[in-house]
Length: 160
Image (cartoon, rainbow, N blue to C red; front, side, top):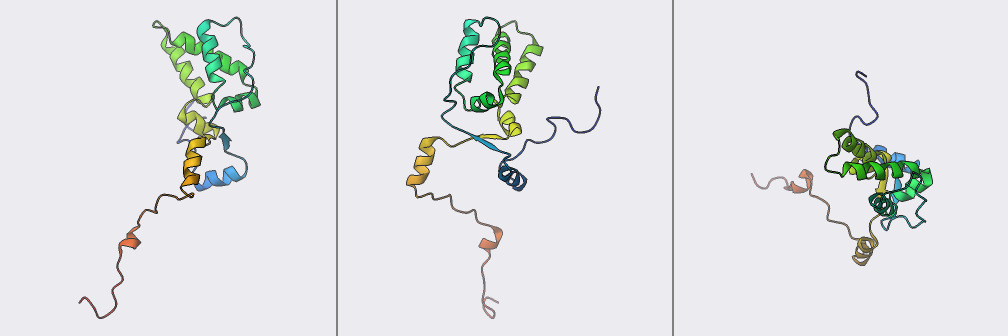
């Protein structure tokens, strides 16, 4: 068994709002995925014949925003294996190791929050959110008051 040292998923996931992440984004580190999902064609099922449940999962997954990256990276086989494993994990008599595999697929395919962060993917704001912000004139929430803002300047000679 491995000892000590960093692991692939050790430590906190990247923060898209940190300064280091901002520099990485300038270098092409973070990928913004469309909120409306993948608009391309659903690929052919790459495994042996799919069950009806696997077929439903396959169609649902290829409508998600993450599918843009799966198509770009050629991850059709991984997505199909996830569908098959998830369908098996949903059964009442599913083994614990199958359920653990599903959790791993969720992270590697960017279907969990931590998986999205580790893959450095973020989903663009929905069109209606962007429209509301534009209608509000792009106003942001007011700046939070700091301790310095609470200090009061007192002219010398007063208030003693």
